[in-house]
Image (tube, rainbow over all chains, first blue to last red; front, side):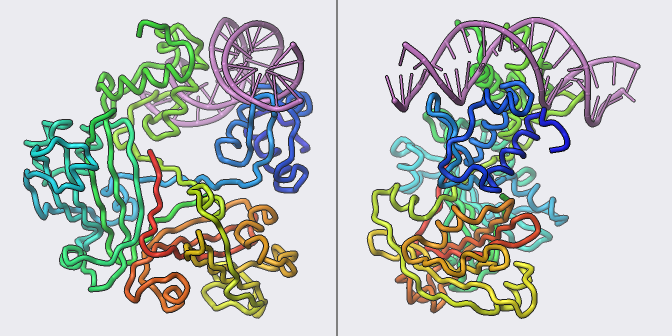
Length: 232
Length: 232
DNA sequence: CAGTGGTCTAGACCACAGG
DNA sequence: CTGTGGTCTAGACCACTGG
């Protein structure tokens, strides 16, 4: 406050402070961009950038004509980084390696065919990969690749570069969805992940699309005690 | 392409298209803002906004002087909405209710005391709440509230408004961390969540801070088969 | 219809880091 | 030192939507 508030980050912090100190309580209408710009002695666009950022973060509700309100239910938008597994492991200072447990071209089960909108009777590439950190099992990946979308995948050797990573570089996608859940260890997981019977395992399911065509469907099961962390 | 590219979203889409079509491959240096602005016939700031958005999404790497490159490892930044549980349930068209399973003021266990940086021998408010959707158990919340941070919590009746929701409105925090994991059902969970022995349950742990002081620590365990979903 | 946010522009200066 | 992104400004017009 000794310094003038002239850059958007300072404006953001000042607004944040007022929300925090309850100068503006949840549900309250706050001054317009023009008024704040005048108060802070900066351009309206600067205030706009600050408020827009806070709205993106879920702390403000903005509507044309209606003005800007402090969100009554500040939905916490958590951003999770879903990196290439190799990098995730290497970031922890561990050595990454992977092995192909299974590779086959076959007609997928009905559920997978439906999820990926594949033609009946068409084969897809099925891969099971074990990802290891310092030679300890880290995650088990079960993946289907739509060969209609990515025909070149057919002849790629996934032993040097994992399918996970190859697809990131070579199979662009437009959108996808992810689901996280908990599952009891299957025999398959027990065999490869050093899990015990009855262990609860963290699971991530992903399905990605290139416009209207599915690209790949993957189910990743992590070793026991895996925790996915993030900071708000 | 028939239309000029004059607004930042159009610029973003065009850049996205070029990345997607491999006009600019992963790792490639793309033209500078000035060059793109000239090509598209718009202001540099407009290009800046588009590229900044894409960089925020993890698809571009930008560095002063070094220029802008297509990310080689497009870290997927997934944003999860962690809303108030009540809204989450009501959004699905179900009826929300909750019951207080336990409420006590007591000296927390050593782990909690350490996590929350509480003074030795100081009591904290401990709450166990069962959240229900259409009267079916949905999630079990185990929460510690730092009474040094939020002294007013001591006399709040959490039966009308859940602690989850009351804290959102009355306990501002500056930051926090979240972890997701899978756990086998404890007896406590089995009793309240209709879980069977050996079930794998999805768990979320949160710890929030107001500057240097802890606010609340919560462990949320969801009913069997719960899936947390998001779209990329 | 009028008020509020959303965006664009042209020009300017700054901050940072590569070479 | 120089090039690139980061940001600010003043003014303008547009888009949406509440009243």
